[in-house]
Structure formats: structure tokens, C-alpha cells
Length: 392
Image (tube, rainbow, N blue to C red):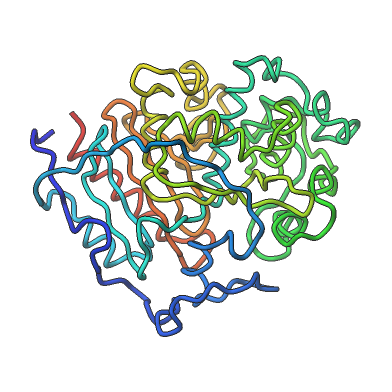
């Protein structure tokens, strides 16, 4: 690595040219629209994805008394073209961190450091880390416990009969279609959660009751599995997930801003998505994971859990087997390639990429045009460039 840690572009608040500004609502001051009945209009994405707690009820994730300071690199350099990436991609924010030093931080579409950007499915990894903490505290006895042992309302349901291990690895075998076409199972789950239809809680996952194959055989991405884990976590800890996150991770890691987590009609956090947080705090979380859950000598998340969560435990979860390119750990994407890295990923371009060996983190918040957008490939290309440039 080049020994000087250098700033690669303008810091927070600096205006950067952004693609598709008018289509994304610039002339309307990036409106915060109500939840749409159909696909989200493009001009609503920026406002909604950085103000979702104004659209759907949310519970605060309180920060602690003092934020843990992040350093700033001293000089500009252009080894990796972060500014060019922003100018070509619909990112609301982009941050690169090496250890505790910010290499680059930039925002577009009039977003600022204090905006709380939606995680979408990046929240899944957060849920997994909280499960690990709950196990270490004895609140959950074993990763091989069945969900129904904690959530009586799932007794006799296929999800209730599934172990936490197979839920964590998206290997339950329960039939669930997630294609983001408005007619799939995740659309049903969305209606019962952030659209506030139905009573919330356990009722949000009851419609998905057909087991397609035995558990533990095949990876099949299903947001309902995280929703079940959220119900288990709430029951096992006896407190809202947002409160548990604040107590166990957000405050200990020195978050700079309060976050919030959207809730369903029954007041349960929507576990499969919907954590809203500032860009720098996503970076702090990524670096905590890069350090096996340790910060300044304090073990916040059990190290063995972080390592297990970021390692494929079965053949069907390895990169190239779970998906053509990536693998899957405990609610965490395992990035295929020559070195072990992992990622928290959410639709429309949300991402936290982590390299534990080089202590590198890159955070994206974005408003891609489609849920599964080809622009995701640009993020992986940028990540590879960061690895080539800043790995020791």
C-alpha cells in the first residue's frame, strides 16, 4: 500500500455532479413521497431513501454520549477515481475507510452527513450479529434451536420448525419467491410490514407455509427468514430490536448519529430491511466487523460469531454455489475472489464492503433505477480497485 493515506476527493458537503438529477426530483427538492401503491416513482427515491422514518413509523436506535472519532486523510490523490464513480452512478453517498481513517466521503443529490439512509437488506446482517450476541448472553440457547421454541405463534408452521442455523443461512427450504416484480412473496411481506396491513408481528410470516425441500440443502434468498429471526430475537431478549441494537452495538461502537428502525403495525421492527443510519455509522459498523467485533480492546460482538457469520459453513453456501458469483454466511454475502471479503447488500444499491485483512470498508447508499440493477457490478469493480490500491 502507498504509505500516505490520502484524500481522493472532496469531503462531506461538497457539491458533486450527479447523474439523472432531474429524473430523481431535483426541481421538486427531492420530495419525500408517501408509500406508493405500485412501483416507487423515480423522483421519489432520493427523498424517501434518506427520510424513510417520515414515511413509515420507526423506533429510534439511540447513540451514546460520545461518538468515536474517525480521522481524515491529509491530502488529495487519484489512485482510485471515487469522484468519477459518483459522477457515473446514482449514489446518494460514498465513503471509503482504512482502519479509522476516512479516505473519501462524498454525497450527491443535496444529501448531507446527517441524513439517515435506508439500509434495505443490509439490515439482515445486523440482525445476524444481534442473534450472535443473544446466543453469547444465553438468551438464545443454541443456533440449532427451532424458531418455535421462542415464538409460540409459529408452532407447527414450517418456519417454526426450522432451526436458527438454517434461517441464518437462507436454507430453510420454505417456498418463498423474491423477484421484486410486485407479484411475488416479498411483496406480500411488504404489505404486512411497512405498508402496515394486518396486525404485524408473527402474522407477517404466516402466509408462507409450504416447504419446498428439506432444510439445509439449498440456498434460496428469502426475506421472510430474516423476519422470523427478528421475531425470535424480540422474544428471546424481551425488548425491541432497536433498543437491543442501541445497547449492544450502536452505543459501544461510538455511533455519531441516532439511527432508527422501521416498525410494523404491531410495533415490531421490520427485521428483513429498514434500518436507517448515517453513512459514517455504516462505516463504523463495517470496521467493527472487519475487526472481528472488537473495538479498542473491547469485544462487542463475539469474534467467533463474526468469523462464523462470514465463512460458508456448507458446500451449498460457498461462492459460486450459493449464487454464480457470491456465497452466503449468516445473513451476510461472501464475495467471491482471490481473498476472503464480505458485504452487506440491499436493493437499489445499498452496500457495505469489508476486507478484514486490510481493514478496508467501502459504503454505498444509492437510488438505483431498479431493485436488482446492473449498476451493482460497478460497485464490485470499485471494490476491486480499492483492494488493489489500499491492501497492504
